[in-house]
Image 1 (cartoon, rainbow, N blue to C red):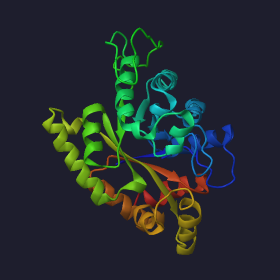
Image 2 (cartoon, helix red, strand yellow):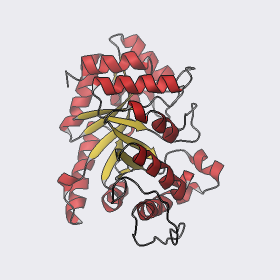
Image 3 (tube, rainbow, N blue to C red):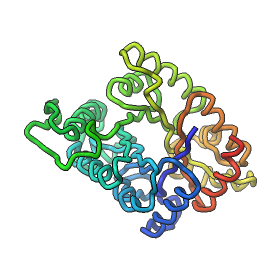
Image 4 (cartoon, rainbow, N blue to C red):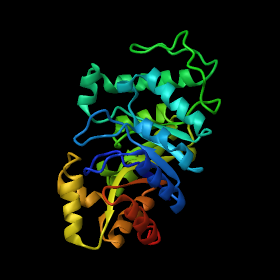
Amino acid sequence: MEYGVHLPLIGFDDTPVTLQRLQSFTETVERLGFRTLCANDHLVFAKPWFDGPTALASVLDRSGDMTLATTVSIPVVRGPAAMAKTLAAIDILSGGRLIAGIGPGSSALDYEIVGVPFEERWKRVDESVLAMRAYWRQGSPPFEGDFYSTNEVDLAPHPHGDSGIPMWIGSWGSAVGLRRAARLGDGWLASGYNTTPTVFGEAWVRLGQILEDSGKDPSAFPNAIASMFYYVTEDRDEARRTLTEVVGTAINRPIEELAERLPIGPAQECAEKLAAYEAAGAQRIYMWPVADELNQLETFWDRVVPLV
């Protein structure tokens, strides 16, 4: 199982996001051996949220040969043409290292402030994926949908690869979401705080069957679990405070549910949770330190990864 890590975009505390902070973070991640560098996407959130594509672009020269990923991009909110243009630029500048995780996001307010009905999000996501593929593939037939059209539009320059940027579809594991991932995606992106090893494993088996039934090879369809918030500490009181005062104030989930799902606590227990995901079929997990980030990256790599 490979590990990636999220750029520190959420304002869990009052530490500002600066270019130096993002660069130091990326240099540490690359040195330790994480294989993917991720950027999430929201316009507004319960906590301040730094712009994901901008942050990812700002550290390209510090990212080595790591894969870059959006986890997830929200093309319905940003508009599929603008999103396709931005991601193509990141892919070109990185030499073709980008994977585009695509989804609707989870914030109705994101939709409200751009004037798009939240209830249309999934239909628009479906069309956005098809529109972006058409934008990225030079000479491909135009896409015509109810919401978007690529007719007579050439968004050159195109991404690094002839087939465009791989798109992994974000889904928490519902039957509809898995069918969407199989139908539209090049991979599946699950959510760390919205699943468990059991739920993930069952969904992965169902997705494999859906892929087989549609004539696709399950072994060629990758997965990853994103937004795995973590904090390694042997002090259980500190772990509880981190869970309630840091993560709990940002994520609208019951605290006990988060305590069960997230690797926040002693190294051995964190490793056991991650090992359970590996046993369930997880191929990549994208970690997100919620405090003391540089020390936590070192601690995770030195004390948790060997136990997994």
